[in-house]
Length: 322
Image (cartoon, rainbow, N blue to C red; front, side):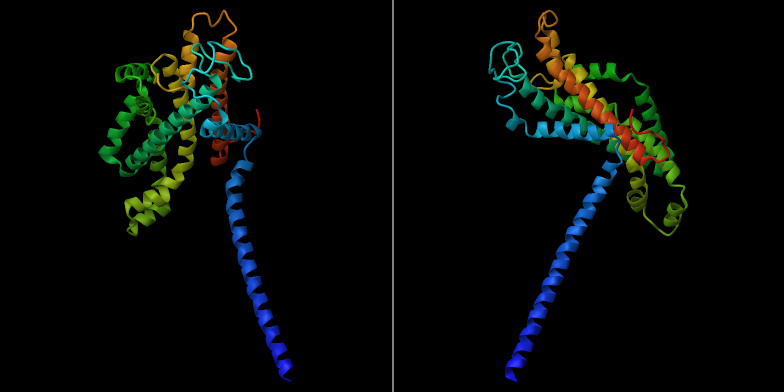
C-alpha cells in the first residue's frame, strides 16, 4: 500500500517536472519565434528590392566592411612609404604604389572611411535637420513659415558648387569645414519637401480631432506628422549622401580637401597632378581604382534610392530592373 502511494507520488512529481519543462520549452520557442518575426520584418522590405537594389545593398555593405576592417585587410599604413615609387601591382602591393611609394590598396580602404563619414554626416545633418525645420515651420505657419521659405528660396537659387569652392577656399582645407559647407547648401530641399508634406498632413481629420481634444503640438509632431514624413526624408537622405560624396570628391580633386586625409578625391588629385600620368602605364593602377570605387559607390546609392522610393511611395509605378 505504502509502495503504491510512493509510486503514485513519484509519478505526480515526474509529471509536474515534465510540465515545467514543457512550459520552459514553449517559452523558449515562443521567444525565438518572436525574434525571428522581428528579423523577418527587417528582411521583408529587402525582399521587395529589385536585382539592382539588392546589388546596391550588398555593395554598400562591402564598402562599409572594407572601411571598418581596413586595418585588418591591409598590410601597410596609408600614409607610410612602404615601397618603390610607382611600383606596379604585385605580391607586395596588390594595387601598386603612388609616386611616393605609398600603398594604393591601403589608401583605397582608408579612403572609404572618409567618403562614408562625410556622406553620412552631411546626409543626416542636412536631411533630418532640414526636415525637422520644414516640419516645424509648416505646422506653426505665420511669420516663421514665411521667413523660412524666403531663406529656402534664396539658398536654392544660389549656384551651389561655385560657392562651395569659394567658401571652402576661404575657410581652409578641413573635414569639418567641408561637412559644414555641404550641409549649408543641402538642407533647403528636405526642408521644403517636409514643409509641403506637413501642410497637407495637418489638415487631416484625425490630427484636427486630436488638436481639439487638447493634444500638444509636440505630441502631434512626434506621433503623427513626423512618422508620415519620415519615408520621404529617408529617400532624400540617400540622395543627399550621394551629392555630398560627389561634392567632397570634387573639392578634393580641386585641392580644397584635407591634405592630411586619404580620400578618393585626394587620390585623384595627386594622380592627375602627376605630369606624365597619361603617357605612362601608371594611370592603370593609380587613377582607375579610386575612380572605379567612386562610381561603384554612387551607383549602389542610386539603385537603393530608386527602390526605396518605389517601395515607400506606392503611387509610383516603377518597373523592376533596367
